[in-house]
Amino acid sequence: MSLLRFGISMPTELSTKFDLLIKKKKYSNRSEAIRDLIRRFLIEDEILNDSEVIGVVSILYNHHQRELSEKLTAVQHEYHHLVLSAMHIHLDHDNCVEVIIMQGQSQKVKNLAETLIATKGVKHGSLNLTSSGKNLQ
Ligand code: NI
Image (tube, rainbow, N blue to C red; front, side, top):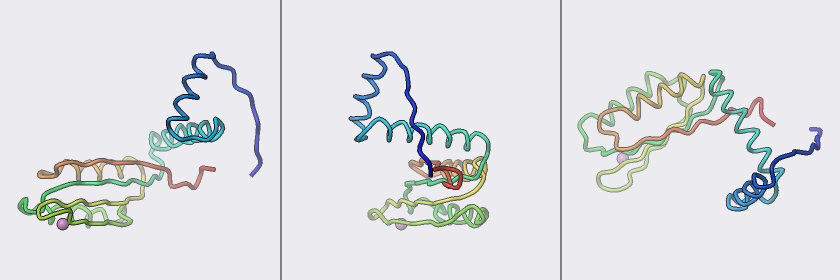
């Protein structure tokens, strides 16, 4: 992998704000922060263009809710080609967290996550999308 160095011009105030923010976000230098920003930009584009992505969805629910566990499992079986792995944690007597890792075209992954999150009885759900890493240095 070859490295390219380039200079960036920007207003001093913007640069000062950026330096404060990357310090807060634990970056050791500007280059690493800018590389991550560029990757984030590229991943946003992959997601918008319906490229293959990885999705991690977490859902919190009460397993006493009638037929909810069965419904969530049935949805995952229906879309098994998108589901890489699922982990279920019994948090306490009532609450469960399920983390489901998916791989596929971004729109399909989003639809599956939205179906799981919107299932009646799910208290909270969130989806994090990332790149499959194949086209990202
Ligand atoms: Ni459980």
